[in-house]
Length: 79
Image 1 (cartoon, one colour):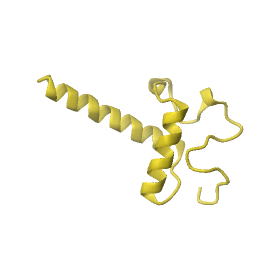
Image 2 (tube, helix red, strand yellow):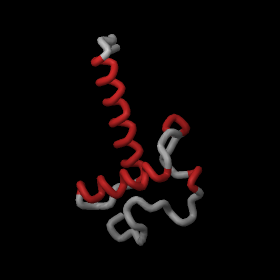
Image 3 (cartoon, one colour):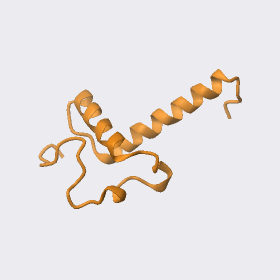
Image 4 (cartoon, helix red, strand yellow):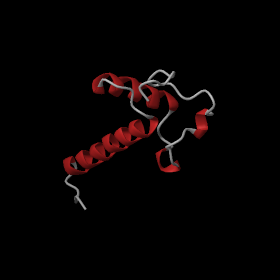
């Protein structure tokens, strides 16, 4: 992907925004703008362009961590 003509955070030109590869329906909460921003930020942090799939994984992991922290704060069971 280092030779990709696409900028980090941009969607491929031949892909409709609602058909982003690597984005299953379970992560429909991830907007195109959030996905693009995540790719820009993490590409800079990693020093290389990250893929859409990597950005989806990052966002999903952050969401899971936030859910765990909220549950812990509320004294919920960590099952």
